[in-house]
Length: 350
Image (cartoon, rainbow, N blue to C red; front, side):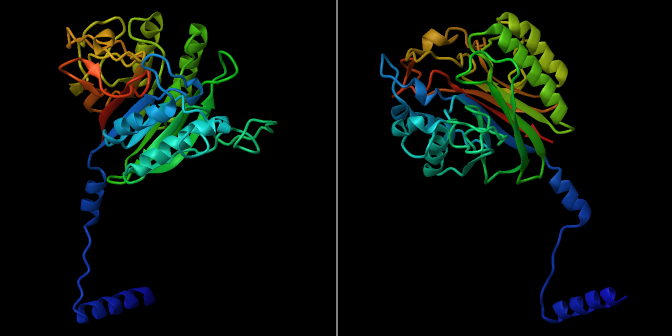
């Protein structure tokens, strides 16, 4: 009763003061929260700073960095999975700013007008997380060279984590899956976003990692929509594609472009709009676009090793292979940013 009287008194004072209190009815607010939202997602293997050299068309990170930043900021991304962003501070002299490559990339994006944050900024899973030297193991959620950057203007981080694959190939650069649950600021939709880099030279390890990844994602996704990105080191004509592309779709998340194992064309395109999809995602630092594309038959999708998968129920508005090239000469403009092209998709969350 006292609460009711207090509310009535406060309402009377508000009216007397000539103020107006507005608010959407509960039904309208609920409907607004459920309005579909488009998210722009990407995956980009930026090539490790540890591989720096100057040979042919290849340039070191400091020279490649502006092109990488331009590609990312030019696509107005909400979230991006990056691979080969070296976490070691041993290469600090080769960077522009920041202690390691992923910090340098984030700093460059934000200096260019972005508002990006890392879902996890720890370098290593050690008591002293900035270095592996005399590492005393502590789980920091660090995912080595696989990282997720998200736009804080459009998304909020809910939770994050990592999976270090049981099957590894070599010990210098272990393969991880990085994951994050993100919430859209516009509509409140939550979704699971992941990125990975599967073993490049060991097919058995790659197969084991892919199978473990599917099982792990299934165990953490709950009822949320899923977007899976990364460098899988497998194109659709490889034997592993015949096994794992159907396995991904059966698990609930198919290719965002609509590619099928062994098919040369898109028998059932998923993306409503397609840009540069006749290009391969690996360019081998070759300036001539004709050498890594189906430029002569653009209805054919490129032989991609970088993939974006999304829950089968999600509409894909657009799919794009990002490359800065001159269509009149079919040559890449300026410094080639990486030996991979970034892939971007616009996906609708209900």
